[in-house]
Length: 323
Image: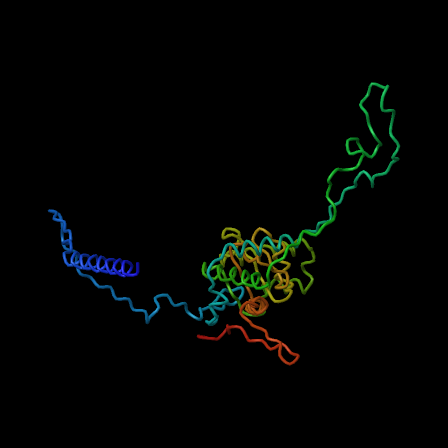
């Protein structure tokens, strides 16, 4: 039995060796490669494409130029360099939409209120019998189905406010300013913006030769319209929003008299929607600086160290190039 087993194992090994030898012989006889012959066949040109990865084609400039004008003469005074992260951000309609909706929701009062059947005046007694009168069955007088009754699912005081990440909201501010800057609709003027009245008119007012309030308001409104039209900031150019760092008597009073030509706002009363509504945005330089400093939390990192907050400064803007 042992000899049969050894003999059978030897035969199996010999069979395997024959099989492997036949496979090697078959591998030597390869099938020739198939080639096509067509009348329209042409050789492809040998082209090599070299990509220079050392230089980047698109390189955003770190700063953008900003002209500072005088008000209301609209004469250029100097040229400054402002950071691209402040005035040259790409347009993000989704972020602007989030900011405008956030501001609208948080300005809703939510004071509407109606009385339910448990709050209206009256008795809870059933008005008349359930059967026997030939009329519809009714309950008490406070039923919402009756005149003078309560209201079903009526409004109640509530808070419509929503939440938005501060960094997203600050990015929306600078995105709106950047959108106006690229379109040429952002006009930055020197500090101390005021609407000076003509010297002859002020002399008449000081001498009490003009006392009628309607006459004074009419002259201020006419003067404001003339200034806005001469600078192409008026009604025909989509109105203008004038933003200053503080209250200016003549400017704010005159703009209130011509709401069809524009409006004047303090920097504390401005939101993202105000930056996008009118055709022109006339901003005082200090007000623009303050708006950017308030809304750059996504550019500044704060670290709590040794009981104090140590933060990094944002990009610098306002460096004078030409004066």
